[in-house]
Image (cartoon, rainbow, N blue to C red):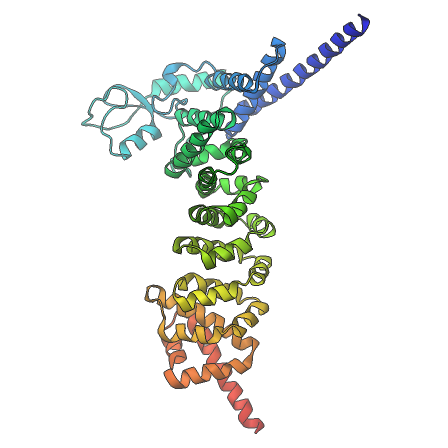
Amino acid sequence: MANSEAAEGLTGFVSAARAEELKKELRRKVREISESEDCGVGTYEDAARALAALRELRSGGSVSPKEALASQRKAEEEFESAAVPKHFLCPISSELMRDPVILASGQTYDRLFIQEWFSSGNRTCPQTQQVLSDITLTPNHLVRSMISQWCMEHGITLSPLDHEQEGGLITRKERNARRGILDKILLSSIPEQKQAVRELRLLTKRNGSFRALVGESPNAIPQLLSVLSVPGLNCDLEVQEDTVTTILNLSIHESNKKIVGDDPQAIVLLIDALKTGSMETRSNSAAALFSLSALESNKVKIGEMGAMKPLVELLEQGSPNAKKDAGSAIFNLCMLHENRARALMEGVVRVLLRSIADQSLVDESLAILALLSRDQEAVEGIAESGGVASMLSIVRDGVCLRNKQNNKENAAVVLFAICMHDRTKLGDIAEEEKSTGSISRLVENGTPRARRKAAGMLDKWKRTMRSTHYSC
């Protein structure tokens, strides 16, 4: 009996301590929301989670994960609405209006949302469906004053919406859609999870604001990736493709690049998909790595995690689109010296020269070779693999008319690097100049960079000839 009472007392003490901890967390989040002008939606969600946990603790009952999530969502909705008067909410976004304006129909909207409505070609009032001959927006000073007063009384600071913000304007309907999809991914049956991932793929493809919105949620990426560990879905190629493509879509939004790159499983998934996915999945995975590699920190991670080998294999064996995506990713990654070394180790020079010979990926291959030629080891590999003859054919004929000048420039960059490394190759330059005069033509008609490199090769050749003559 005594033990039972002690246990109950201990449980009560722990519960009280936990409740106090949750109260402190809730107070912190509410203070942050009240005092900060630009706190993210994640702060609101953290506050809602603390509120839901406190409610559950006080009820004293154990609940299932689904019930806990439902309770959390309900708390979030209550917290977000915070008894905001209905006439303070924009009918389009369901958000508190920053700049209320009146239409000719007498209805009030937030300026940026109704402007976006009209910019999309609409000429009606969204609420009344009345056709508007006059779409003048008149400031609603009364409602704006009432909203300002209400915000002051509740300690809320509204930062103005930026119409040019990346991703566009986000509505409450979109926030609810995000919640619903992520909940289905986490807790639904396998068919519903599969459908939810497909739905997320489509929404992030066509809706820039939704890409931004998903990135705001700290649990969105882990929840999305969790489907690939679900028995019955972990070997499903369609789910793999939808997941990879969703990551690609999300990575287009600038601030999501770091969020995706920092997730411990995201890059691992993309590299695995490069090896095991369908051709479409492999292509989208390469495109996602290209997008993510715009950040220096991601370049490092992608290279260290072993992406170069499957990218080079895709460059060699993929469909035309997949080769382009692989080439773009390799180019971006090779901006980093360590990744250039990895690409060389995986035989990228051979693959690139073969692509030029086959005229299957000339532009991209020349750009990568010009980038690789910054490193001596790469220059040696290009020279030993017949690169001089290949580059001279580009300088002479251009091969690909679409980017003729750029291709000649990149070829000249590679040739100059080879000649600086191995002066015996100047003989090949001399033979080319004597028979076709293509190097001199490049000095006259090439891009500024191509002219400098071509002039440098001719100057080096002439000085070598004079030196040889004097020594004789």
